[in-house]
Image (cartoon, rainbow, N blue to C red; front, side, top):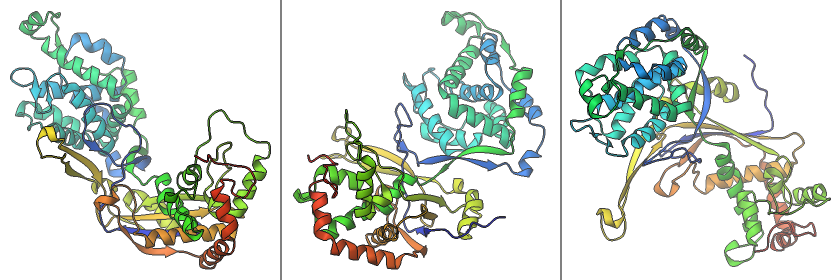
Length: 478
């Protein structure tokens, strides 16, 4: 194995001393749900040799299909799907078939007019956080408050849950990619089975259907052959680079810069636009044109403010070019061993997928704990105390020594201010300790602080008038 040579970098090996909450930034669900998922990134993980040699996947799939019945009128719809989508539809169809309830209105949260919306949101969450169909069934059942299925449904459920890992991964992928289609298909399958009963078909004014065993076409069987790669796609929890960049570098670096220059944003010493640029990277204004000397303006700002040189950003009229810092992180776990061993010699036998758990809290409104007072129970995924994280901060070629020193000082200030990662720090999440730190720029950090002191008046003036010493106002004064 090739060993990565030492490069210009800062390396941190961290261990959580409290649980970590780091929610998904995007709007990843539509519908009723009180669960916030951890941020995730797609990873291609190798399929174990024992899993790939466990048997003929098509024989198992055929045996599983033989345990299901569908109405004959849904066969054209099933024929239009690929193989994994067919199995996914059959899985979804089990919920309305098993949990229709005595009155036909459902059970637990899978009841009433919104039962399919609740089912859809819980399935959408589960396919992100689960890796097997058995785990998915358990998570969805728990979140919907569903009882244990009666014995007559054990056979099809167990058959789905004991498909080969590669087959289950293909079904999970189909659910992630086409959940609305599969929800519709599963609901239609359940309805078609009901319509095989003459009394129900007459009462529902629907045509009588014949119960048949679903089968796969040659093309659908081929999709399963294509779905057996050496690697399978899995969504793994991850700390986003953007979040780490803000917490470790931008926020502490901006605080250090302002404090060293004697500026207090809360007392109108710094324009809002400058504050937004320092702490958030800034934004370009609407309907503006880039000045012809933008490259010269940027060079001047970078030379005067190493903090800006490191992280870049956007002023009102133009975007800065590439920043001098790149940041990446890996949660130390079995799935990341190849990367963490190469970078820092770290390995683990613990699977990251086995460590996620949900934390539930209650938010009570003013005046009491009744529904009218605003009480709300909510849950979110967290990583446990003891989880280790490797963070690598790399510098581009020809990065100036003061720029490297500014970033090392930011990391040191982050540690001194409490060493928190992720979200919900106010509730005690995300506190960590440093197990190992490669901080090779001590002299550069000291020189950076000296330069802030010796050039204090000029640098402070450049922030107060929003020119950054260029002679042109770069950030909005309001």
